[in-house]
Length: 245
Image 1 (spheres, rainbow, N blue to C red):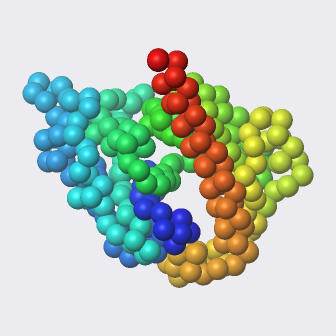
Image 2: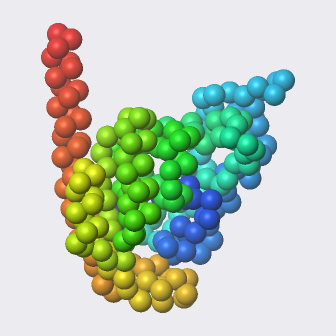
């Protein structure tokens, strides 16, 4: 929807399930970046088992992404094998550096599909995001996860959270979100058209239906909020400049 309004959109599949391509209608998704072992070793590796914490990544989106419908560029992050409580290695350093570059330097809309749950927050890969949308299912466990996401987000400096209730909700779900201090961006109803789109490997935007129309309304509201955040950033920079003078 953003691309059809003229935005330069980079969509990143950062979910280990790696199914964003079918949702976007990308028939031939790019190879996961973690499979480019020689590239990662060249950029992030070092002698003696060490690694470069901030490798060169400014050419990755252009060189290793693919173009999808409406000119969307897509990247697939891939998974990093970790044992025990997790390790830092050239591959994870490479992916972290890429996310930092894209989120802090590119002048386009960068949208990440993260894995469900809180692990990416614990690893700090979402640090630097302007806005995080929590997709909440109408149930107690999902609301508990939303509460944990809010806590962890504040600890890594992600201040702006919004919630989207998936498969309907209303009533108690919305009340709980309000009590948690997570503003509601919108609700997406349960819609069999999404099931049809998935079974037919078709992008939901091309399938249509109630859910897509609800997402369209969410997108309009989202852009208004993003514009407000942009203005806040600009005002903050201007104030800092004045204070320095």
